[in-house]
Image 1: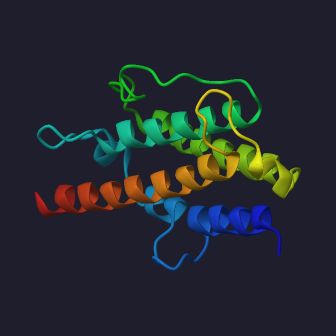
Image 2 (image 1 turned 180 degrees about the horizontal axis):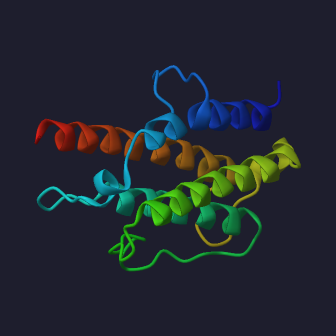
Image 3 (image 1 turned 180 degrees about the vertical axis):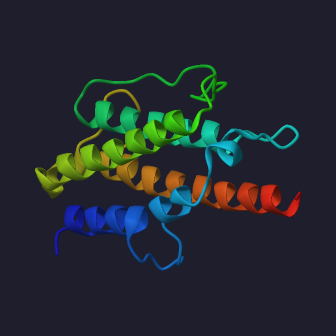
Amino acid sequence: MENIKRITKLLKVHYNGQPWIDISIARTLKSVTAKQASTAIGELNSIWQIVNHVIAWRNALIGRVKDKPVPAPADNFIQEVKNTTPKAWKDTLKKFETSQKNIISFLSRSNDQLLEKVSPTSGYTYYELVMAILVHDTYHLGQIVLIKKLLTQKK
C-alpha cells in the first residue's frame, strides 16, 4: 500500500472511525455542547478555541501543500470566541468536517511523490507536514477530552 493511502486511512479513522486510541474527533466533539465548548477553566483555552485552532492549522496545511503558504500568526490561531450560540458551535463543527474533507480530497488525488516534496516555507517534507497534523489533532483531542471531564466534574 502506498504511504499516502496509509496516511489517508489514518486521518479518516482518527476523524470518524475506530482508531487504536478508541476515541475519534467527530464522536468526541458531537458529545460537547456549545456551553461546554465555550467554557474556559482558569487559564486553559476553551474547547471551542482549541477546535478553531485545529481547524486553522488544518487549513494552513492545505495551503502549504498547495504551495499557498499560510504564515503562523503571533496568536497561533488561538482567539476569543465571540458568538457562542449552539448554532455557531454547529457551524464550527461543520468547518471542522469541511477541513477533513479538504485534506482527504487533496490526498486522494495525490501520490507518494507529493509526500517527498519539501515545503518551500517550512523546509519540512509534505509527509512530515501531513503526519504533524495527525499528531497535532491527537494532542488536542486529548486536551478536549480532559477539559470536558473537568467541566462535567464541576457540577
